[in-house]
Image (tube, rainbow, N blue to C red):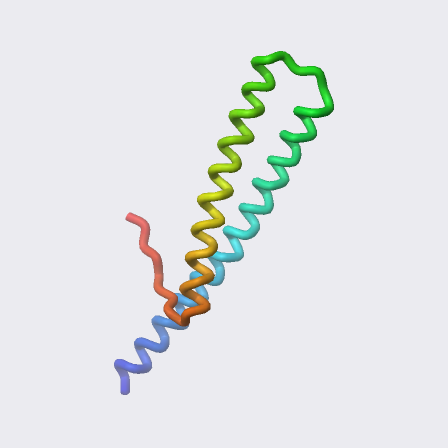
Length: 92
């Protein structure tokens, strides 16, 4: 019985941890999308040199890759929560 309670407790802690991570990822992704919109506005609103356009394009591409990676992570975390299989992810 004690082992079952301990496992339930671990599952609850893991679920809270993963839910917190999902909220953090959602906020981070939203902030990066705002930055992406800012780059788009900057790119269209002013006359830029070729080098400046290239720099903005590079920043945009990096943001898009970062957002895609974070979206994948968020999807994985939400999937584990939905499946009822949360676990504490340890980063070494």
